[in-house]
Amino acid sequence: MVAATGGIALFYFLTFILGFFHIDAFQSVYGAGSLGSDFSIFVVIVAALNLVLDFDFIETGVNSGAPEIYGVVWGLWLMSRSFWLYLEILRLLSKLRSRD
Image (cartoon, rainbow, N blue to C red; front, top):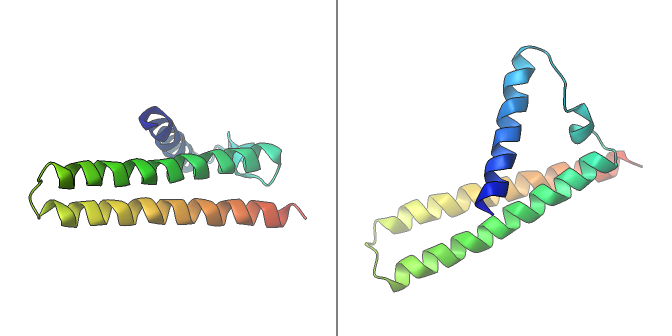
């Protein structure tokens, strides 16, 4: 799961850097075609599974007696993962709507 998340982050970073040079190498992934929708579904699944892994990590930390200050860090981490999942679901819905 960590490798899939890293691969997605690397892909997004690469498209961000290539955007500075006006290179649209991955336009089909961001489009509303079948490849774009499949990629969005894959990213939503990875984001959801990362959220499940985060809850397991937090539960393990609480059971092992981690200090209370980690609650703030874990809360911010969960909020950022939830926001990522929310954005990816919106992106998927946008692609599915534009296919009509």
